[in-house]
Image (cartoon, rainbow, N blue to C red; front, top):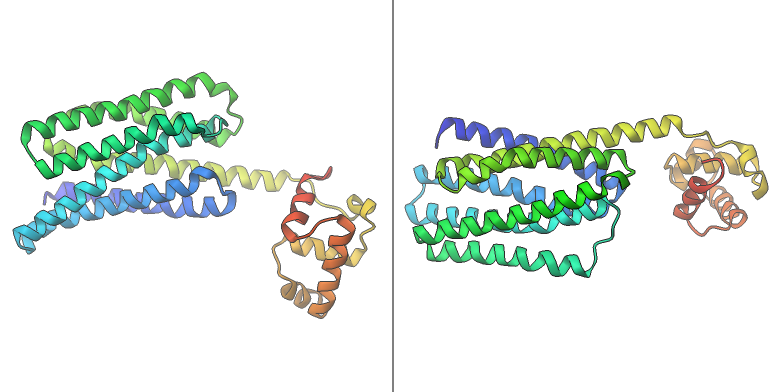
Length: 300
């Protein structure tokens, strides 16, 4: 295995793992619809590159049949990952421009993704030189077609994107994608470029996601710093007592009833009574409802 190729894959895997870790943390905080799908696709891409390295190294240590099988698995995972990308890109776009994913998009992109995967799998089984070239050409046109749709739709709706982090990542993905189009074309004709193209794609988009997550976390920090402080007088209309207000503050800090009891040096039953009274006075049924009420109140 070429040393530089190995270095490229290793570096790309490291950056991709960083992007995956940050995305998991970001998804826990924000629970975006596309976040879970991105975690799946990023995990598949990392697995794809690990399989590629394993398939190349197996040529030196394992029988030809086993290394050929590993190469087949790598190719299949790669095709499946790209098919997932075909659906993920427009799905992510629908979130960015705040237009719900509907039945029309499902009818547009799922058949394309299925056709992409079917063609790739068929070429793997038949494995004839001229067929493989034409399959790659059709697959490249499929991806470019979906990409062109996303670009046009994004630029038409760019002014309507209110989330600054979403706007930044949308523009970054467009710039990165445009710069990688020549690589996709050359990969059709040269196998060595095709081998290098996979880690470059993953590295480029992983960097974009890392930058997005850092922007998102920075905006969250600014929002917390600029958020008006909840004051006792703000809840006067609910007739909240000072002790109940203290409990509310600790709930907002994420403490459990037992932790609140330890913090205030009172029994858990007393905390339970305070929480029940707070729920009754504020007309909520759970901590989630309480936090939502506090977030949406006039003091928020």
